[in-house]
Image (cartoon, rainbow, N blue to C red):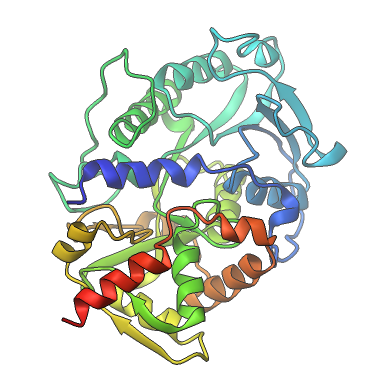
Length: 366
């Protein structure tokens, strides 16, 4: 049976996926006009899925970018970005030493804060030398079992034991929730917290949304996710990331749910929407949740459980969040995916195998 653990594990991979460089972006954002006031921005992280989208947009806007991380992927941006090397854990190696001193930045964008102790260390160290601290949180912080439909004031999961620092499916949500609280406590009105849902689009390292785009494109007999009437939510990275930069530019405080699409869609509506992009004969098959659990059939992006959840994004929309259409996201994701090297596509993560799909179809035909 799918559980909270599987949902939180799915969430953990949204931000902790494999490294992506700027060259991997397909159909990049249209050139952004330059900002009237260039800012000095410090990114904690910057080499994952969302970091390149953010940094490329910030550079287009004329901002000066500094990136702090472990340096394992140095040189991604050439000489356009200043790189500082260290570790989020202040007790590991040089820790945060590269961020010490009197240097100031207009804003910090924290994409890599997973452990509360690490988040507190960077937040406190920088508190007197930055204007705004933007923390990229997650909707996995919400206690959906207590309240399945939430807005930004919804109940959060309780803090984990202080000794818990290993990020797992079980601990991801509570750890991020506590980091979320720490940033708001330290920075007050100078804190901006954004809680995204599934982040999708070109460059997605989790392969979840990409599976459905690719599978519907190939056609044939497609095993769809269970519970066709449940709501599904996602956010295109090309909508989320520029908006995060604009929040910093506008010095916008508060908590926001970085969630789409623009209007409510069900699992079934998403499948039929993706089906429209395939010229191949396609038949959709809908297994029960019990059968999915019995056969342990992978359903990427739909493995968080049976609860019909909703996360309200009205405050984010009021603060300027806009959306690509499903058509744009699907088309561009497919174009990016087909342009990947064969070994990358062959190594897609957690996709159903042909044998698993055949076994499910055989059961559905009984």
